[in-house]
Amino acid sequence: MSEQNYRIIEGSLQERFLNLRTKIQMYGGGFGNGKTSCGCMKCLQIMHDYPGCHGAILRETLPKVTGTTMKEFFKWCPKQWIKSFNKADRVVTFNNGSSCVFGYLTQQGGDNNSTSNVLSATFDFALVDQVEDPGITYKDFTDLLGRLRGTAQYNGSDTTMPKTGPRWLMLLCNPTRNWVYKKIIRPLQIYQQYQQITDDLLIDKNTNELLIGVVEGSTYENKDNLPEDFIRTMEMTYKGQMKDRFLEGKWEGYEGLVYPEFDMNTHVLPHEWIKNYYFQLKQSYNLTVLEAFDYGLAVPSAYGFAFVDNKGNIFLMDGYYDKEKTNDYIAKQILKIRDEYEYAIPTAVVIADPAIFKRTVHKDARETTSLANIFFNDYGIRMTPGQNDIIAGINKVNGYMCKYKMHQHPLTGDWNAPHFYVSDKCQWFIDEITDYYWKKDKDDESVDIPNGKNDHAMDMIKYMLTYRPEISKILNKPKNDTRFITNWSEEEGENYE
Image (cartoon, one colour):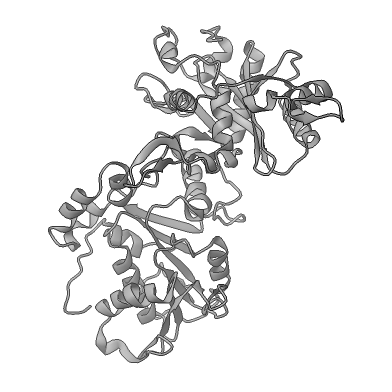
């Protein structure tokens, strides 16, 4: 396309992205894997094949789009295609009437309000580079989708291309834990792994056709288009989980997480499956239920409802997570969850934050009591103090999170599985555990103290495992039955409780 050569190899990330035809198209993965170059090339192809179309190439801020993405566009754009370029408006116009604006989605104005110069226009296509940048929001994403209303006619020979538009939104992204993962990638992973359609899945509800296509891969997959020392330099710079994230392009590669073993694709299961499994086991034997509670007033209270199967697996099935609620409201939420799962054991005990057993609540001018007493006396919810040693609690939880070669995943049957799982209904738990980091010292090194921010569900899970055995005791117990869970209702099996 220009004097420089860009190799698009058969079966490569670039070819797969160029061949996507879905309404929303994402190119993700490691640094230098060809995202920006390929995205610009696809925009060039659209502008060539849809004469008179109008598109947008966007980044978070104006300096970012003019300093990187716009330069990459002109690097590969044939000069003979260009009719004009308005530097003030940053609009390039082709000889065939197609045009493209280089804009920003958010930028701080003088009054510190977020402003945008593109979300009031209409486009035939849009490309967002580095969509994971913190200033770009889920609302920006949905607003852009609403702006794809162009009707330019296709003037090519590829029968797979839309006849008009094409009304595509293309997203380029490095691995992230923000809304991009939670709202776009994770629902797609759940669908691909479990065939479950969640509320956030980008799918046509009438035809059940996916509206999104994702191409992702490591830096190594673009080695033919990189300087020979690029990967070597990256390997010297990034180690451990940073290498996983920025070279391998893994969504879970985040340095400094307290629970690095937690993997959305392994530990998170569909709620309906866990619920059905619970009632199946409940009919078979005396099921062990675990309840835990971390109290908060200005910050969220966290209550978890879990159970243990006869293989020693723990399933966090449901719970409550909210702030600034009365004791009456919290208690009724706990009782409501118990009712839903038909758990009405008079001797049931919630393992709770030790702080709520202190006599700090005034009943009247003469008498003080504890929150634990109030929950028991007024609502019949019995509580007992949990383990408050942070490091010991984290180590125990991590033991259940880790994968073990001779342990099977309860849903997939795959070996090398953990002993802890969580329902996708407990998004509050997932949000916390994927954003729970160790503190950093002055040298930016992790220290053995969690950052203490948004740790209410994390405290709850530590309390929950207070009286569970260390994982080593479960692993060392002989197992005679290795058949899948579908047979468990017919077998007595071993009972770890």
